[in-house]
Length: 210
Image 1 (spheres, rainbow, N blue to C red):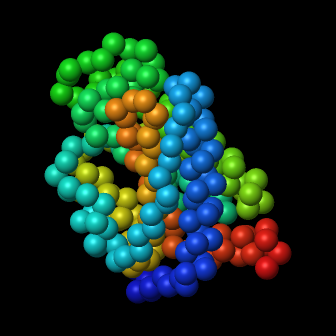
Image 2 (cartoon, helix red, strand yellow):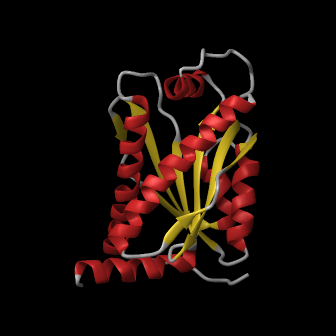
């Protein structure tokens, strides 16, 4: 593992946030079309810290969640993860997407998971297509997979892969809110490969003619 630190100035952080915001905005548009309602996204939050600290920063390690994971390949490698909590908000979200009657079961069934995976594919595709165009880059996604486990376990699995390449992790978080609904799902995380940030900043400079 490389013992390296990732440092950015405020201007560079603002550029990364703007890129994430472009991708997330297109995801929100795709989600809005799926549910036929206005979708509001939060301002992207960036966390840069040592790999071993990330699971404690993201949230309650023992909370059971379902994560929809996609690998990002090409010029800006990393991971996109949609986090869904096991509560009424997620069940309401599934009902909005699929018109399925709301279930009171403790865990999501196979139909629920298929809906979340397909939604993840659509939202990630909208985001990465927009970023490909904006950056003039080749960015593609893998097929989504679902994992239901404690949040800490899921994050540690992702951090294990990142930790093989860098001692520092870069995570961007965006939340979605569907207007008029008690739904603040999903939470979207971009886990950026630290080695990709330099490429992204160079592509932004080229785009802006800086």
